[in-house]
Length: 106
Image (tube, rainbow, N blue to C red; front, top):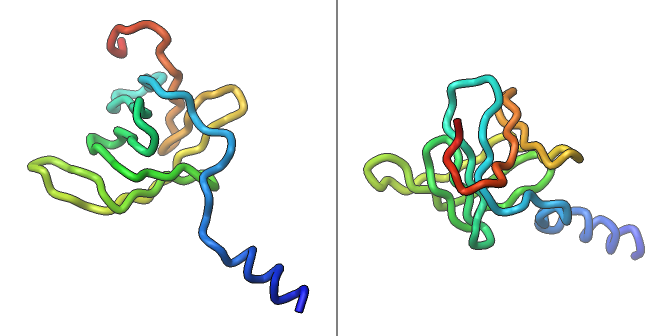
């Protein structure tokens, strides 16, 4: 019975990692790609030129069932997004650093 309970816990829904990126603008380093925006509302992520709602960042991935693409199309999204211990985001091999000032990315 204990093994069944442990299995049920392991098979449950994936929760967001406790270590989450701080809200803000994350600028790419050394690559000509769009910035990533986290928040300010919980579960909102701007990534790959889409605005995602209900986004979850867990296990080195960001997922959402409701992202708005060009023209307002609603599409699901699932991609690699790793938050490093240095608070740098890693997406598609590019590092993104949080911009502390209110200016756009350089």
